[in-house]
Image (cartoon, rainbow, N blue to C red; front, side):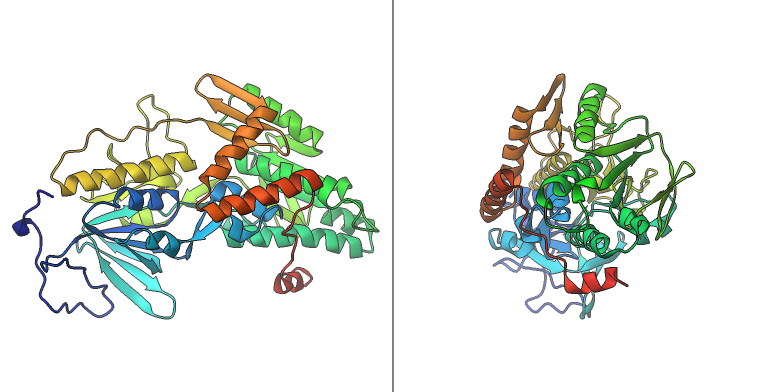
Length: 455
């Protein structure tokens, strides 16, 4: 490094931090290392930490969960294809391979940019005040109910493992309750599933649910036929998959209809309650309503004093930086970035990884007194969505593909992107089993949730 001792802050032999403050780390010469605090261990946060692997920095990685989630496969946990452990990996296992990373299990509740510190609330311990030289916010998104937060009680979103497990229990319990129902009306209500939002998550979830009904549960009930369930996909726009080319969206819609999914476009959801949904004035009785529509950013971005868009995402500068706060960056779904062509960078995993990696490398160059090579540039590798077994769509520039070969590409890319080798082996094994038998191995309903469902 070209940094001199005068450029770095010396600390005494015995560090005496304020109460609740995480002490700094010193090297052999007693010089405090620069500290990079990363909030969020998703795709962007992990990518940023990895990019700093060979830098002489103290990285503090903060997350309220102890695991990293491969979010593109959350819908398969929600539909019993995979178990939660198959798409997640402990954060500390990652930290074991990178010695300059410390992990803190906490939720960041405050940021003081002027004092260069964050408040991290640790369960059962209290609040730690953690100082930083650089701060990277990578907290992702959460469901947005467009001003109707009361819908959340009846229509859970799908953003983490807890959501996926709750949805799985809700779906599986619906069939059990339909089997036990005395009236045809209640049986029909239990076997009607409504998904609000027809983006990639809604489409993939609906297709997987349709195959659960028609194949996995076939012949396992005596009073109901799961294949006669109603799966209704509601979209407020004019078509499903609005981020894809219209030709691909039409092919996906045709595939969904073949699977038995009913598509309602141009329909606005006005009410969600314990009975079901009201969309465009029409009541749809349903015991299971799932929210796969809009998202909003974590409120943490607003604490930075940064300008935000309508979804609460920080409007960052060309270097993913918060213009109002030196040394502070926002990456992944929590940031809003506009490309040279005027189109926003999409909120997908590949974008989050590229942004996190870019900021990590930028900080590394700054520590060496080097200027950044260039502003952040998003390289679009394409957009994919899978619509059930043997069918997927792909859009990359002018390339548009769909069908079985595209599905094989989707399978390969997702397997190789899983966080650990053991995840890849487990998922590959389970996918092969499910492909040839139609069975799903994670169809357990936790007892507490079964009891709650029956109340």
